[in-house]
Length: 206
Image (cartoon, rainbow, N blue to C red):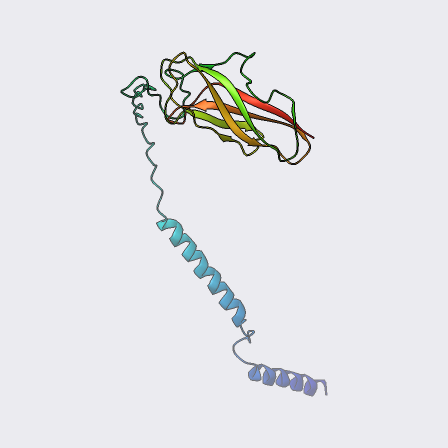
């Protein structure tokens, strides 16, 4: 009986061995893993290739300093034209024209602090003297410089020789508002250049 059982067991083992496949079964490869590995390989090869062919920058030359030319020396200019009595525009006429006045006699009319009614018309006259070497003629006269103009209009003056005294006047209109007002005027020559000291009028509107 034991002999038959042994024979059956051996026979069954042989049958199973004959039915087993000759090559061991392997698992199906992961396609995604294979693609990822291939991509990494391509990237690595591109990086190495780019590194091999990247040009090395050449050193730049340091610019040499250049000599800056010095500006030309300015030629000094004179304030006078061909005629030394003519003064350049924009400068006081100190060479040819001058004037002065006596503080005790300069106010011929309308003393300082004279009372005026609002809007009153009046004429202020000053006595001045030509103390320059040039004769005053056409274009000479008074011009407003500061203070309250009070609609001032200077009266033209005639020919004034050197050393001669002359009375110069301005037509005024008093302001309508109550208060104290001062208006200053100065002589100018035919070129419009001011000279001499300013003269002024001071009134009280009440």
